[in-house]
Length: 283
Figure 1: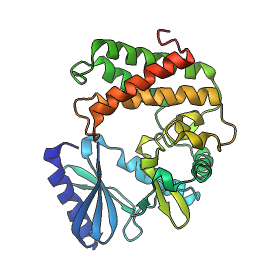
Figure 2: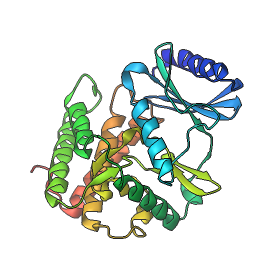
Figure 3: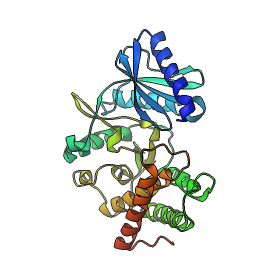
């Protein structure tokens, strides 16, 4: 979120919580990206705030409700208030239960795989309109091609990233296979810990595609514990996801910590993987 918008977004969250009878005298920023994630105290509620024009909050709230009803391991909406989207001062605010974030060292890969398998099983039973994973790839391709949005990206790197995204999108698509509703970004940053086990949050990235696309966001060891994985596709999906997140780091508006350094480092990793596995990125 733009720095100039943060104070207003925080005020919108505090005002929303207070109007619902939730005490919000202190605010801790948990995450700042396209939306702001806050911990409100002493009510101990998570507020997620996004500009009205750039959000899918209603979709996320409804999907979280449906998945929770199906027994899926997802973060719960705040139970003390009505589960809905609140609009205030140009922002949408949603309220969620607070859980401690999980760290990769705390999560055994087998537990991670079982939780993700349970999530996927519940998602297979839902029929909701969502983008295809290739739509996400296309967004990255457009960003690479836009010199105004990625002015610091060197021409050789721009061409390489664009070719890599296009080639892997085609190769994965040509593999065919079953597709279903996915989380979209079930990386460790979107995994929480609760008494019942691991929970997934941030459902706004949901899309349709092969299971391997979701597994590509998890630590590498998780794939070994997930049944029925196409490991060749998983390897290609991992490289595709790395190319996508590398692209985001070159966005002039990216706020990821040390984003430009990571973008440079990840470009090197992509080149090494392409050479090691003999991918033809010019196809």
